[in-house]
Structure formats: C-alpha cells, structure tokens
Length: 381
Image (cartoon, rainbow, N blue to C red; front, top):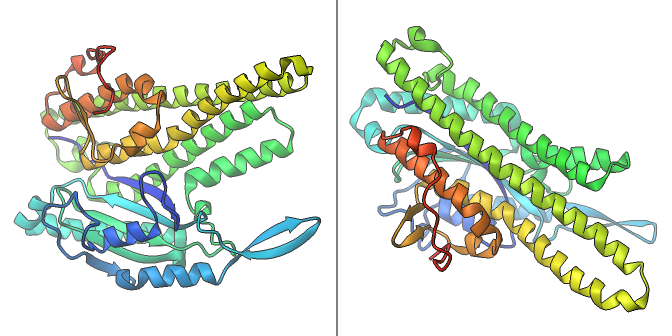
C-alpha cells in the first residue's frame, strides 16, 4: 500500500516571460485551458471553479499592477515609477491530490474525500494569505487532480516575491547580514539555509493541516489509520525510500552552494586583478570572461532545478539508455550549459528512484549509482 503524500509547489511570475516562456498571461491561459496553452493535456476539460473569477483574473491582475508604484531614489530624491514588466506580480500555489482522477470518478467515497481536501487546502491558504487569494480552481483532466491558487500581493510595489516563503526568507536574511558586514559568501550560504528551512516549514504546515486529517500521513501510526502490520511495514519502506530521495536533493543543494562560493571567489580575484598595473589588464579581462561564464551557469541553476521538480511532478522526465533523456521542456536544461552534465548523473538517479517507487519495484539497488553516459553521448536529446 503506497503512502499518500500531499505536496504543494509555489512560484512567482512576471508579465515578462522567463527562459521557459512562462509569464502571467501564459499561466492564466493555461489555467483557463485556452487553445494552444495546454499541449500536455490530451483531453482538456473546463476547470472546476472554487473561488473568485478565473476568467476575469487577467484584467484584475493588470488593474492591480497599474494602480501601484515602485519607489526610486536618484540624486537624493525619491520618485514613484510604474511597475516594470519584469516585476514578479503573481504568486501561485499548486496543490496535488495523491489519488488518480479515475479513482475519484469511480468512487463516491473518494470523491467526497477529495472535496474535503479542497476545503482544507483552501482554508489553509486563506489562513496564510487572507484576501490576497483572488482565484482558486481545480483541474480534473490530468492523471492526478490538482488545485491552483492565484494571489496578488497587497504591498505598494506589487512584489509577489514577498509572498513566496523561500524568496522572502532568503532576501530578509541576506539583507540583515549585509547590513552587519558579513562576508558575501557566508551571507549567500546563510540565505540558502534560510530558504530551505522556510520551504520545509511550509510543507510541514500544509502536511499537518491538510494531509494528516485525511490520513495522508505516515505520522499517525498503524492503529489510528487501521492498517495491518504488513501495510505499515510497506509504508515504512516507502518512507525510507523518500528519505533517500531527500538525501539526493540535499546533495544537489550542496553542489549549488559550492558553485555559488566559487562565483564569490572569482569576483574577489577579479577585483584584485583590476587593482594591478596595466601590464596585467589582458589577464584581468580573460579572467572576467571566465567569471561571467561561471556566473551564467549559477544563474541557470534555479530554472534548472525548478524544471527538474516540475518534470518530476508531471511525470514528463525519463531516461532511456539508448535514446537518452526525454523531457517536456528542454529550454531550462539546455540553458544550464556545462552545469547539466555535472548534475545529470544525480538527476538520473533521482528519476530512476522515483520511477521505481511508482512501479512498486524499489530495492536497495535503486540507490546504487547508475551507468554513466559515454563521453560522446549528448546529455539532452
């Protein structure tokens, strides 16, 4: 009996498209199932409206942003400016229900449980964000039903990143440490620890408030959930597997942190070279170009990891020893450049372990390193 795990994903968007082509308009149109915006859905169905007006949200968003201003300081004078198109003005939460859509259609009891999950999830969201929640609806035309929540920030600058626990925690910690004169590398490391802690806290709160009342938790024990000893043992094995997945995630995060430290070292070296005599100018310029390339790779890490998470959630990423990788959206992987070959073995192990868990064939060998690609094989087809 596999464990039912509830999970949420948070993200912010601007009116300007990111490297994956995502923007406010794209998110809204995909949510509304407008033509051409849902290639991943074989048989699109109208959304199930729960709260607010999904069809009118685009205008609500645009009016909300138009009424707000950002403060700019120049020559000691403060002025108000219109919100730029690159300002992240939309915050979204996607909550996935861990039972296939077909099961809801076949079981009135499971459908009632799903409706209770929706009520609990909406109540949890409203408790955290209040009237900033503008729209909530469900998609029931994919393998697993899921809930979409759209928020507009009530701060004067329409900054949706202040609603994202991860971004807000990182920003606040780094701003405080910078004001205290902390070394930039330590500042970045502390910010990364804060964002991880914030997201774990968010998931724990959601799991405790929404998942546990519905029995979607291994923390209640076999007695309360009326599980047999064999079922409980199976869930414990699954829990061990998820711990192994979490260890892989931590390893990837450490690699990200190490790359960020390297970028900081390159910055320091650049400043030192720039202070030397003109005879070292050529060397300083070469080093600067190398630093920019490394910084570009570090910048690509965020979209790459977000893409891996999104592909895992949607089940669209897989690896075949003969044909290589198959993903829904190749843009973030190609944009990652040299970082992808470094992270690809760990991601491949993660995908293999997730697939093994879904197929019910997980064994200790699932944690063993898989065969590496030959040097001349492409990392992404």
